[in-house]
Length: 347
Image (cartoon, rainbow, N blue to C red):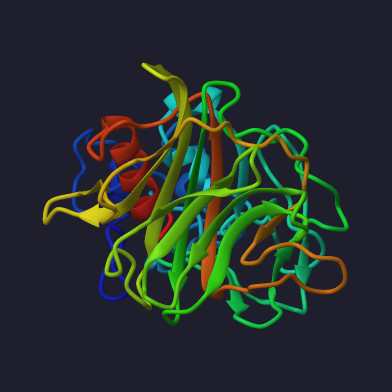
């Protein structure tokens, strides 16, 4: 407990604040020195915590009044230079996560210049048409970019294709997870890997005017394999996470290509991955296409200053995993990821 901000002060109690982080305890019963407390080093190895909103100036003349409000265990002020995501998410994910855009982390985006991918793939992008950026200011406020449904989005057209992800089934599958908040029920693209031509489309996650979302992958017959969520799975003006899982397996008819989807859900006790309202998995025996294309966050990429089919809403975090997919909405690892990102990143 910090030193009080007014009233009479006790030197032994100030010592206790250093030694026990509690002004009202003096468990060790030392005889403190005002100079030692004011300059640090007494108690032994206890320097002055300058993260406290009030602390002594360490110069003569020393005075107990300089300790009013001093909090020896005060935490550092919030800053966006810390990778709070990595601190929150279990290390189990480290071998699977390959791509992350995190608007709560300044190394990913600091309000100007390129949007940087901060995991191992390293494919960056550009902010189109001055899309507005809201930085994180605390543990309860996420950083995010706002797409306006018209031009504002993130587009890697000028930075290049996402060459590490050209086939969704390869490498034991792909999982894409995005925290977002849509403003309206509308037709827009939350995320895509495409160059806006019919021949170079890999996948899309789209918002629909019905309120549903659409997860789809292009196959080698140039058709879309599509999963559509329930219309109430992702309400407007609410932070939600959509999970799109793509994999293949050997069935009675040979290779089967599968799309599954989940959403962040509150059980009344905790956050977890829940059903997205679709009636069944999306299955096909036609292989998914292999394409090399740029990516759009909040749009389908196109040349010039913007993308097409622009999303109307806020986007905080995009993560792409390889080699891990999910079979049920209660998978413990996925539940843990949703819980950690929701609670620790202010979502």
